[in-house]
Amino acid sequence: MKIGVLTSGNDAQGMNACIRAIVRCADASGHNVYGFYDGYRGLVEGRFLALDRKKVAGKLDKAGSILGVAKLPEFKYEQVRKMALNEIKKNEIDCLICIGGDGTYRGAMGLASLGVNVITIPSSIDNNIPSSDHSIGFSTALAAAVEAVDRLRDTSISHQWCSVVEVPGNDSMELALYLGLATGAEYVITKETGFDKEKLLNDLKEDHLKGRKHSLVIISEGLTDVYALAKEIESYSSYECRSTILGYVLRGGSPSPEDRIRASRLGAYAVKLINEKKFGVATGIIKNEMVATPLDSSLTLSEKPNEELKQLLHYIK
Image 1 (tube, rainbow, N blue to C red):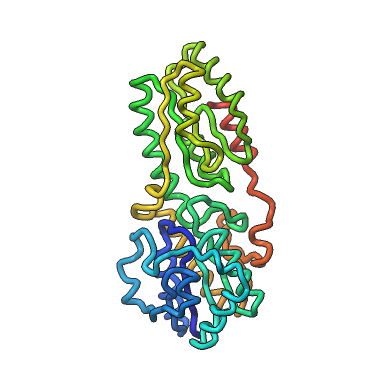
Image 2: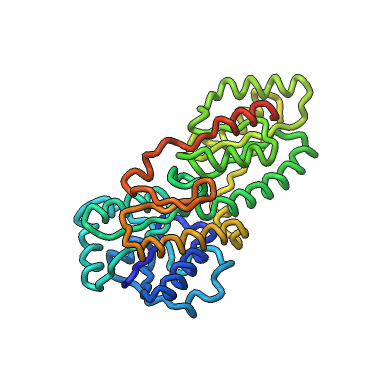
């Protein structure tokens, strides 16, 4: 078979490890793999290259994507997806593996509705794909965030500051919640927990009056202007306050061993599903078991249960 593969949306550490696994497992099964440049944009424009074992050699530990990533908002329109369909037919691509986050999944659903044989692989530092416990890149991004906050806290404690740290994931609480637990944050604010600014200001003021020398606030992006929030905290609570945004820096760096293994397992599993001619599914790992979820329900599953972690954070902060 001729297998197409693309990486779409934002990059995440482990994408290259996943591509490598796909190419090598496909080669062992007698398939040919073609990588489309720049996600769905390259698919629409028909830009691709043949991938073989040599082209993916030495890529296991490399961040980013050798195929490039891009966002194509116009892909939501059927006429644009039909352009991609024409390229798939013209180049006789039998099936397509789409690696990315929720936007990539929605694009894959659109192609599946046109009859394309599609399989998706979750890759997002936000960890916002309900059909898998963890996405490729989450482990590495979390480790980078923890290291950054640990360094920041050393300075903040010395200066007796309140630190406000914004992290990616406005539609998912995963990164903020795990980071808060790993760094001992006093407050974690996400879309799911809700943002009550008045309560936060009052709590911080009370903490400071009780003698707390330092407080750490982790907040998901998109909820507020963290620079303005830091000024409000400073004027209201008497804390000196500094804000830090951890953004694209969390996407770089060599993938962790966990992400290399996860990416390799998911890539190999996608090829296994192709060999079994099972399409229209989203790959995932749940409780360490490989799973294939119907693609049309992969983003509408119940949210991951985080109540235990939220309760733990409340008690030990």
